[in-house]
Amino acid sequence: MGRDQRPRVFMACLAVVLAGQSWAGASGAEVDAAPPETIRLTLAEAVARALRDNPALVDARLDRTLHRFDLEQSEESFLPKVSLEAATAGYRTDRGADTGGYTFGAGPRVTMRLPTGGAVSVRPAWTARLGHSGGPDEAHDTSVELAFSHPLLRGAGLDVGLAPVRLARIEEERHVLDLRAAAMDVITSVIKAYRAAIRADLQLKINESALQRARETLEVNQLLVDTGRMARTDIVQTETDIARRELEVVRSRNRVADAGLDLNVLLDLEGDVRVLPVQTLTVEPLRPDLESIRALARERNADYLKAHLNLRSAAIRLAQAADGTLWELSFEARAAFGGQGTSFGAGLRDLGGNADKGIYTAGVALTIPLGDAATQAAKRAHIAARLDLRKAERSLATEARELDAGLRNAVSAVELGLTQMELARQALDLARQQLEIEDGKLKLGLTSNFRLATFQTDLVNAQVNELDARIGYLNAWSTLDRTAGTVLDTWEVEVEGALE
Figure 1 (cartoon, rainbow, N blue to C red):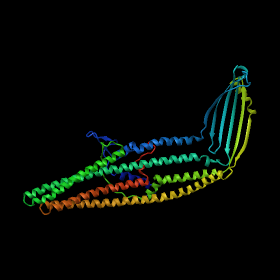
Figure 2 (figure 1 turned 45 degrees about the horizontal axis):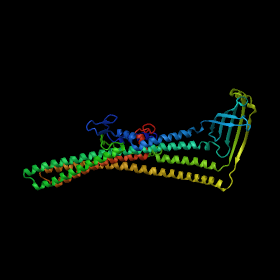
Figure 3 (figure 1 turned 45 degrees about the vertical axis):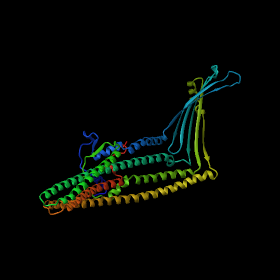
Figure 4 (figure 1 turned 30 degrees about the vertical axis):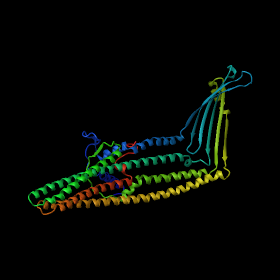
């Protein structure tokens, strides 16, 4: 099998094994008419309900609203920003005389940052002067100011200019990974809780069957006593066994209730509502391929991917810190020209005529920090950023080793679970055969109630062990799926869709 086909084969295996059950019922939750407190759910329906209603995921969805806003703000940092400026003031030209007036000014300012670190601004303005008496003091001034600045050392270049946007995008990726991890945790918990509910229900049935067999044995005992082939005192052993079986039935019912409550918490249901699993634990034995799982895990595991993000973030912050040690050298250019008239239109016409008479400036500005206090902080930040980068590299290597070890352990657990399941099935078959043989002997009066009760207990233990082996095998696959980070792929869940 080619390496490019292994991921698809692995995902298909996970989908079959993790479902671990024969599908029953159509899609969508079916509510039992009697009693109304009972909800029948398949495993897929329970997972879908948890993704919609689980409190942890509801909070995560609410947090995503703010996360998206932060990213949008960062992405828009290079779009033009428009602001409106307005002012009014009174003035007097001759103390004691009525020669003053009022000025009214307004105009927009448009600024735009450049990815390379520079900035451009345009500021058209209009000012009106109105005298107290009107007439000669009335005038309209118009002006336009253009400014351009760009750093040549500190803050120059795409690496520094785009650093805030790139960090914001990395932070967004981290938030998405956190959301995926939370969803995978919830799905895995629901799967195991659903199986725990199935286990509790099946164990109750096992104990009820054992109780029924013990009562049937009591009937056989009574028949043997009536025919004189068994002493009446020997029935005490069977009655004791019945009492013990009744106690186990009561305990099993309590376990069913506890498992239902655990599932209700994950599904955010009321305590008086019981979820009835409608699937059986049909298991298809499969062995995992470690190599294909490892390749998928390096693309899906949230902790491993976050370690990569931390490394990228540390590299960007190192570039920012190195830039902070440079001098401030920038190029600045400015152009300003204006016009005047007795009306707004006249002011604009005069502005157009004076465009070649404006004031134009261009130059270079240099700022050199002096003293240890001004330079040591930048040097310290640079050293700290360099150390953070080395730590991020070591953390990524450590995370890779831990991921590999976790995958090996999870694969071993699946293989061990498969072996235990096969052995448990063999032991169950033998326990059934032994009980059938001993039951036949009892009907012929060739054995004792004590031996029969012992084989009854052996059968119950074998049934419980086989049930635990099946669930343990399925849960081992779920743990492997969670370790690899492929839970959402297995259940075909889109983070930005079903979760949000």
